[in-house]
Structures are given as C-alpha cells and as structure tokens.
Image 1 (cartoon, rainbow, N blue to C red):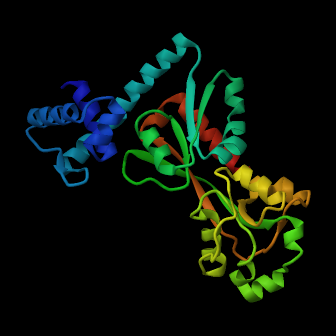
Image 2 (cartoon, one colour):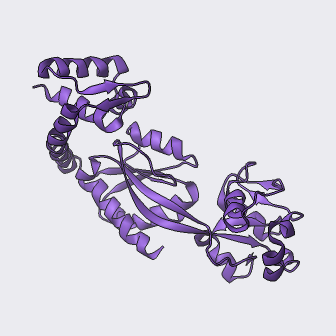
Length: 298
C-alpha cells in the first residue's frame, strides 16, 4: 500500500474535511479527493461519509486511522530527528495573542533558545486566523482563547487569565466599591472607556459576568493592543478591563486602581494547541511541556 495515500487519509481523518487536509498537505482538494478514492478502491470499502460540511469517517475509516496514525507519526519523528542532526538547529514557529505571547510565551521558551532552538513568533489577535495558520502548517504551536473542535488539533488548557476593572486614581476617587455594588453598571455609565475594539469585547464580558448587564456606553479610546489600552487608562483616558498579569506593575505603583473586587472575577482560559500527532516531534514536545510547566506560576 502506498504510504502517500495513508498519509493523506490520516490527515483527512484528523482535519475532518478534504479542504483543510489539502491546505495541510500542500495539495489541491481534487488531488486529496483522488487519493482517498484510490485508497478506498484498494480496500474495497468506503472510508468517509461525505457531508455538506466536511466528512465523517466510517467504522472502517476510524479503525484504519487508529491503527495507521501512530506508525506514520513515528516515521515523521524519525525523519525530523534526522533533519535535526544534519542542520544542527530546529526552528519552532509559535503563534498567539500579541500581549500574552510577548509577556508569557516567549520568555518561557528562553531555556530552549539557550539549548539551540530557534523561535519565530506570529502575534495574532484573531483566534480563527491563528488556528487556520496552525492547520495550514505555518505554525507548530499556538496559544488560543477558544478550544478548537475536531480531530485536527490537540488542545490543552494552559492557564486562566483574571480580568480586572481599572482606572487611573483620579477616576477611581469619584467612585467607591460600595457605590458600584449598590448601583452596579449604572454608576459607570458616564465614565469614558478605553478598549481594543468598538465592540467592547473586554468590557462586555466583564459587564455580563459581574453586573449581568450590557455596557450602555461606547469607547472613547480604541487601541488594538492591550498594552496601549493599559497606558491610555493609566494616563487618565478612562476605565478599562485588563488581564491582571498585564497591569500588576501599574496596580502596585498606583498608576491604576482596581474599581471593584468581585467575589468571582471574570476569567478567560488560554489553550495550548498543536496539530494532532506533532507532539511526536521532539522540539515541539519540549516547547509544549516547558510552557505547561511555566504556566503553573502564571
């Protein structure tokens, strides 16, 4: 049996569609379809049920994938290890949200850089774009704020990020936690807001979780980077909702003041995502393990 056909089959099984498998393999969709049909003819059994959106493996397809995938992954590992020995340096391609990747991910990977691993990062604010790039093979490892579905990816919870409602001291002096607890979001309606987007993604999530309401205001300042939001808020431009890790220094120096300390603060979970099977590659596995260990202190 042609190993190329098996590789294509396993990729389709993990991707859940011919289109995504074609992107991963660098082939056209008709070529992928042709290879799967050829394999089905050789076996005399259908391997996938074609649907409007993607494909679903048959029982035979599932059995073949579970038996063949580990061996194909082992062959890839042997090949990649051989490349490591000849080139001397492996490159890890990482993608994730700009602020979190800059503040958490890249510093955590420094021990691997010291061991000779080269790192290339893509700072992407859109989770869908990040996962599409991972599926297409542009990245080896990604950090996402949504858990991807399907067999194409393997996602592991990395850490939770606490969100804090903050403002510069001059704004905080006009409010008190008691007033906020009594009046809720109404007490904040007249305050200017600093956000990353017109849709107020951080403020809206905070309002829903803490006040069970939607914000009744629009942003005064839009800055598509949370570090810029932090600096604008600290300068007095308005209130903001920020990840605690990103504003701990400003809170300690009183450049920013927390406006509220809810019993259950809003959280957002980060996931560490790889293409299924690629943890067999040593450089990806080392980075994956290192980030999971580092996240214990985040």
